[in-house]
Image (cartoon, rainbow, N blue to C red; front, side, top):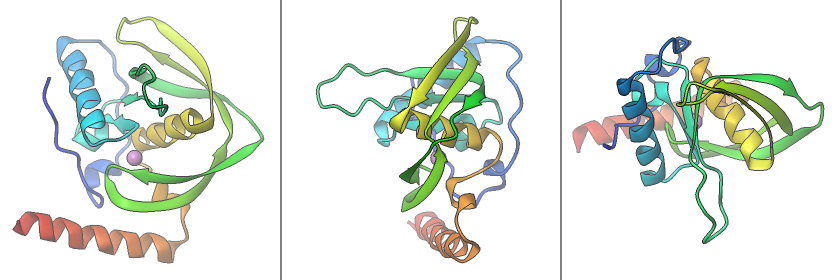
Length: 173
Ligand code: NI
């Protein structure tokens, strides 16, 4: 396993629609392993392939927060929301591609998601709480959408300017 570099917004690769995965290859398995390691290392609770520069519909997540609880690493290939609750939930979201910026985002409180696993089998599960927010946030990444796209333009521009500055500083370092 290896850590991958996480792209920082703004980057055109974060704005593209990712391509469906047609075949589970050794490369894809390695990508999923690397993404999980990169996510845990960050640390974060979710990571989508476009964030490491790969335009494929694959995401990883683990929203287990309780101290001492067993981790639950999940790999979702070609995930799709098949049902969403009318009830909404607001979470203060962040993103590994937008470090240290957080904002309230309102999304369906519960969603049912269908996906293909690394085993090639079809899976479906209903998510609520933080898991529901996380899986929707990560699926958005596959559609080239960031959580700041839900914010008012002024706030979004302010965050984007901060990220441009951050990237400039990192490039200099
Ligand atoms: Ni994100």
